[in-house]
Image (cartoon, rainbow, N blue to C red; front, side, top):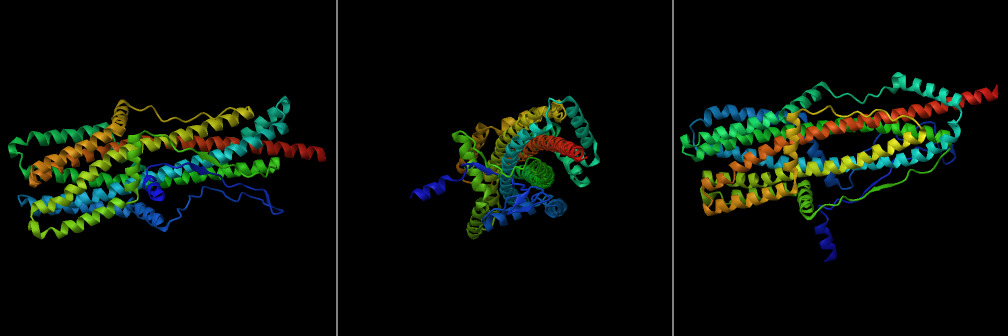
Amino acid sequence: MNRFMKFLSKPGSKPDIHGVAPTQFTEKDGLSIDKPTATGYEPKSKPRMLDRWLDFVVRMSGSEPVFFFILAGLLTWALLGVKYGNGATELWQVLISDIQAIVSYVFDSFLVRQQLNAYDQDMTVAAELRSRILSHRRMLAKLDLVTDKQDPEKHARLTRIVSEYRDAPEFSAELPAETRFGRTVTRIARLLGHIGTVTLFWVGIFVWIGIGPLKGFSDLWQLYMNSASSALMVFVFAFLANIRERHAAYTLSCIHAIFKVDSTLEFRLRLLTGDNIDNDVVIIPAPKVNGIQRAILYYADFVGTLVGITILLVVMVVWVAIGPLLHFNSNWWLIIGTYAGLIGMNDGFVLRNLQARLQGFTDLEFAKVTTEDDKLFELLGQPTPVKEVPEKRPLTQRVSEAVGRVCAHEITVLAGFLTIVGLVSGATAMRWTLTGQLLCNVPPSLIESFFMIILITGHNSADERKRADLRNLYERRLHLLAYVNGVQTLRGEKYDTQTK
């Protein structure tokens, strides 16, 4: 019983993160090693095959072929709508709304898993960086005896040598460049996440509401907006999955470059000091959250394992089974879209919250890395490289981010859940007629579309901060490596003088 309860309570509880950077030994088993054994970051492979398979599926969902396939599908839907949707029965609108709701539902699960994977990787990277910093500090303290900062002539010579290393082409503080297509996608992401896009979205909705009386607030009038907002939502989902995977791949290449310099730095320090102690394990404690946030994380873990997609498949089997009872009418067609739409709306609230909270946790850990780096430069009496900060954000971007923060709050997620309860109650009072089901389709579709745009805004802000952090990390390690190379050169000069 205890094991069962422990199993049930495991989702949502973020565990402690254990990280240890691979030790760059200069000697092992009596044999000398002439170069670092690990020259980059090695992502951790998940032990379960099912998890690895799910991660592969999620990566494919953000690939270019899938993105362009979704675009082609939306274009085909628009062209076929000219023939089958104009003045036709409600079935066409209902059918396409169902398809879009199901696709969005699936992408919800993929995006949640993307977010959870990014959190695990970022926290592990922060832990491994801090693990190596502990070794750097221990060995740099030993170098203080070698450089003897009290000797002005030696100190001035060291400063000149370090400066020469910093100015060398191979020490250029440039991380891997993003592809031209990647830069184009990033610019489109900034446009979609702009407050102007959000404003235009709501203007369109109010225009639609304004023409409602002219159409008698008919079911077809509601279906047109449901189809349009669902099409927008599918595009945003596919686009967001693509830019997340693209930015994740770019981030991983930057982390690899940082770890390559960091491991080289460790190896050079071990050569200079003769230190052969293993790097320490760094443990990042599990973040503390309140009860509501814990429930949100529990639900996110549930969705991130793609259990929700399995449930959707079961629901679809039941839905097909009851088709003959409802004579496969428009009301029956809308049932599956209603289910997927309501769950998708809740997932939209959860996704924005998840993005903000997990990013906040990782930002805190990378801030600790920065603080520890600053202490290394203080130990050496060297100036800390000037930190790059994101450019001053315009008012429109600050407004977008403020809206995003409100949307990410736990209370907002709770309000969204209560809204869903209200919509279900209203549809039940209407005996789940076509109009009643549209009540559970149109508002969720509009709300989720809005939240997906806000999600892009949050992603843009987080990506901008992360790129600045990575460039700062890289440049600090280049400066430290230049210093260590300078010490090594100075020691070589001293040895040559003594032998002569």
